[in-house]
Length: 164
Image 1 (cartoon, rainbow, N blue to C red):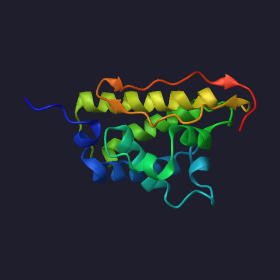
Image 2: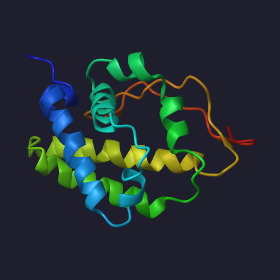
Image 3: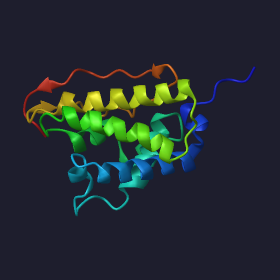
Image 4: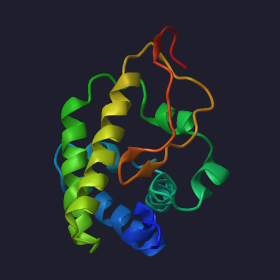
C-alpha cells in the first residue's frame, strides 16, 4: 500500500500551486473589497511566486519559502496590526475556492475540503494579530497542513502589548 500523497503532491506540485496563486491573485484583484490590498503600487513584484512557494511548503512541498524568506512570524507581521478584517477573510477564502477551479486543481471532495479547511484556518489566524498593539511571537515555523488539518504545529497565544 502506498502512503497517501501530500496535499502539495496531490494538487500537482509546483506548477499547480503557481497556477493557484496566479488565479487567486487575479480573483482578489477582481473582487471590489479585496482589490485594495492586492493593487498597491509597492506590492512586491514577486508576490505571486512567493505565495505559491509558501502554499507549496505549507501543503507538504519543499521548504523554499522559509529558506528564502523567513518564518511564519515574518509572514504574519506583514498582515498584522490592520484591525478588523473579518469580511476580507471570507472573501479571501471564496476567491481561493474559486481559484482552485480556475487553476484546474483536482475536483476531489476530500482534497477540496482539506484545502478549504486550511485556508479558513489561515484567514482566521491573521485577525489574532489585527489589534494595533498585538505582539507577534518570534520564530514561528511555517505551518504544515495535511489531509486531516494542521500537522505538528502549535502557536503561542497573541499577547496585547506594544506592536512592532
